[in-house]
Length: 80
Image (cartoon, rainbow, N blue to C red; front, side, top):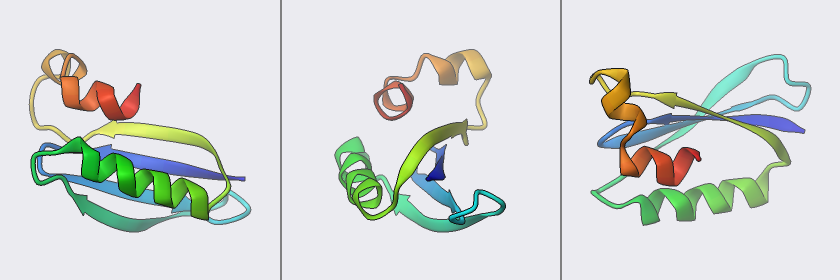
């Protein structure tokens, strides 16, 4: 099983995944949000079907204060 990392930003969402032994992680791709989380969710669904993932880690890529970010509707829709 692998771990998937999500670096959620206002414009782009970075995706990283570990190797099969969970020793290293590599950037997999960057998803352009284009103002819609539907694009991100669709691509995440495809990635999760392709890889055996048992852990998902979300990270804030915003430059804003943490409390503002944590309350963000977009972040919650992806990382909750």
